Structures are given as C-alpha cells and as structure tokens.
Amino acid sequence: MSTNAAISIEELTAQPLPIFEHSAHAFRKVGSQGGSTFEAYGDIILKDPGLALHTLSQLQATANQPFHTEISSMTQATMLLGIDRAKRLTTGHPQLERTLSGFAKAGYIRTACRAFHAAFQAWDWAHIKNDHAPDEILLATLLHDVAEMALWVAAPEQMHQFRKLMLKDGLPTDEAQYIAFGESLEHFSREIAAHWHLPGLVNDALRPENASQPRVRGVMLAVQLARSTERGWYWEKTERVLPQIADYLGASLDEIIPHIHKNAVRAAREAPFYNARHAAALLAMLPGGEELIIEDEFPEAEAEIEATKKPVTNEIAATSKPSTEKQVPTLGNGPAISEPTAQVCLLPQADLFTQTLHDLHKGMGKMKLSELMRKTVHGIHDGIGLNRVVFCILNQKREKLVSRYMLGSDNDPVFSRFEILLDKPHLFTRLMEKQVSLWINDDNRKKFWPLMPDDVKTLIKTNSFFAMSIHVRDKPVGLFYADRRSLDCKLDEQAYKQFRQICQFAAKGLANLAK
Image (cartoon, rainbow, N blue to C red; front, side, top):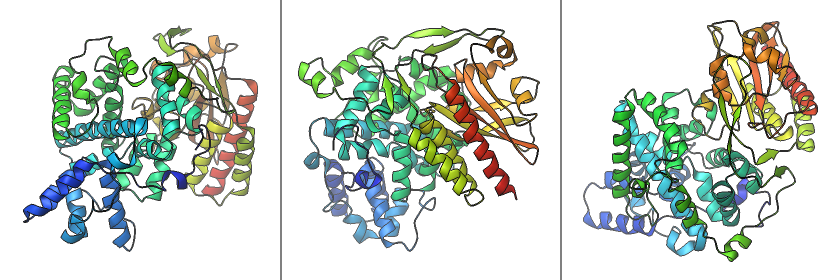
C-alpha cells in the first residue's frame, strides 16, 4: 500500500492483530497446571491487545447478537467461552514475533506497551473512584488506540510517516494524521470498533463529546498521559495533563504525581515482555531529554530521511516551519493565550462539501439526529477544511452550552469538555437570542473580543473563529463552533459562507426532526 493512499476499513481489518509469543507461552503454562484457570487467562489477555480482540471475536462468533457492555472483564469472557475454547485461544493465532518485522514490529510493540500503561493507570483510578467494573475500564483503555495497532499491521509505512511528521517534524497530531492517512486515527478507531463490535465503553471513549462522562474521562486522561509520557515526564503536555488527573481524582497534585509514577513502575513490572521502552524507564530522565527520545526512534541517517520523504496529499497544505510558541493578542480584558505556530492547514475538499450538502438535502426529515449532526460536523471539518468543529447543545436548565458532536479535538481532555456558561451576559448569550452567525476576525475583533468570556478564550486558544446559533421553532437549541486552531491558518470569506450554508441545512434538518 503506497503512502497517502486511501485506507478502507476492509483493509484495516483484513488481518487480525497478532498476539505476543509470551501470551501463548503463558496460556500453555496455565493450561498445564489445571484447576480453576479463568482468572489467570483473563489476566494474560488484559496485557495483550491482540489477544483481547481475538477473545472478543471468539465470543461474537458464538453469540446470537453482538456483545457490548455485557462483557465487564476478560475473566467473564473466558468463562462464557468455556474452558476448552479458552485454552485454545492462542492456538493457531498469528504471533507478533513471526508476522511483523522492522519498524512495523517496533511500532506495534511500542503502541501496545503504551496502551497497557494507559490501561493500568485507568484501572487504578477506577478503583480509587470505586467504579463498579474496573476491568471494563482497563479493557476500554487497552483498545482505545486499536487503529494505530491495526495500521502498524496493514500500513506500516504510513504509520512510520505519521510518527515522523508528529515527533521529528513537530506537526500537530491531528494535522499529521491527515497528511499520512487522509483521515483521523479517531475515525479509524470508531470504524474498527463498529466493525469488530467492540464493547460499548470502547465506542464511548472514542467520541470526544463524551468527555463529561466520568468513566470516559478517565479513559481519555489515561490515554493522554500515556501518549505524553512517551516524550518524557517533564514534557509540557505531560505537565498539562497531570493537574487534570488530580482534579479528576479529587486529590492534590503533590499526592497524585508520585502515585502515577508508582503506577508506571507497576505497569512495567506487570508486562516486562514488551520489548519497548516503558514509561517508567523515563522517570529518571531530567527535563529537556525529549529530543533524545525522538532521535532514538528516528536516527539521523540519510537512508532513514530519504525513506520517509513522501508527497503531501492534495487535501493538505504543509509548511516546514519549526514548532514555536507565540502570544495571541487578547485585545481586551482576559488572559494572554499561548498558541503553537501552525505547520499544516487543512484545505477544503470541494467534492466532499458538495456531497455533504446533497446528503443533508436528500436526507431531510429522514436522518436520525446522530447521523444528521455527524454528517454536518464532518462536512464542516473535511469539506470546508476547518480543524476543530463542535456542535454544543443548550442544556435543560438553559444555563450552558455543552458539546455533543466534535471533530479535531486531538483527544484533548480539556477541549473535549467544550462548554460555554450562559449565566452572565456575554457574546454567546447574545448569539443565542436568535439564529445568527458570527466570524471573529481582524476587522471586528476590537468590537467583539471584550464580550468574550475569559474561560472560553482560555479554552479555544485562538482569537479567530466561526460560530452560529441554531433555533428550532424560534427557540434556541444549540450552537456550532469552528476554527482553524492556529493563527497561521487564516479563516476566509469563502469558508465563512460555506460554514453558514451547511449550518443552515443542519438547522432545517433539526426542524424537520422536531415535526
């Protein structure tokens, strides 16, 4: 498969995820000991994402209907399979050490190791929060990055390119995904989760708009922590996520940091067979060592550099600017906002935009709410080329707007909890008075920026965006928000017109549903 070629869900799921040779050995050892072995099998499965997926697929094969939230642990799963089938789970299944090689093998192991670190952290936090099924949270976290593992198997060159764009070249994760794959990993994960009938919590945690749900938030925070600690415990993103975890667990940062460090060590000891650098190994690294980690994965060899030079897809515009920080002017009261300089700007896909309008028009009154809104959000994100898109609804008490559908959040647990309080008069309370759109730009910022709530300024970290309130039967129901994330990716008149157009179609669709 050539880099930048479209990847279908059929290609991604054509091959099962391999299991570790260690898992097969451990299964044989447990089987030879006799006695009650379901719990022992369950413990092995929860350390191996490929084996966990294989176990679930075996359950699907024997079930009359798909399993979802009914499976709360792998011990339960093996009991449902029965002892004879459980013993044979690893028999004949592709093993990692025999099926992958080179950077595909290294990348898969690294991703699986990171997934287990995240899963162990989330499992521990579930116990702290007295969750009714910590193993269910462990499994959902373990499988959260299933798309990355599937891509290392099906399209290793593109995954290698993605990692290089993100780590070596410093591109924002969301934009690097679109260069390498033409789609987001989040999209691939959702497609895989639906195709393989993964448990409900796995699906829920793959939608950023669910970040307000406590169990989902725990999964997202653990995934974010594991991703950031790949670059070190003193990296800026790691230091940003730690206070969010402390807030989630209701403890002080001084208490949480050593506890999380201990979890990283425990995770490494639980799964020493991962032939990768565990997060625990980086605890001794001093601040500023992130570049050494990147150089280790991408050594400065001419062959390596040439192997990863690939053309950029025609849907994406890229520059070669180094990643830097600059200050976005606040132009009024409110905190200064640190904004990364953009290196990739999503370009509009005219055909996709036109198709979205056609689908919305054709499906008027026929689409379900979820289909209507997801098609609209995808049309704005991909068709118009807007990096972050949110549709937030007015809550029952009509005191705030809460995100319901979202694209481009890059699994950011803060932005994923996008909400706008309406308890005091400000720009958005005025927008909600009638169906109206607004584009904050250089010409009107002096007028409108002082009306922006400070918490929203801090949340969005940019000072240019589109917004449109949505009314049904003359009553406010929600608001669309979209931006290009960075000041380097300018919003323009054409994009604004298209944004209004697609939002108006969505409003008509909502009105038809209300009938």
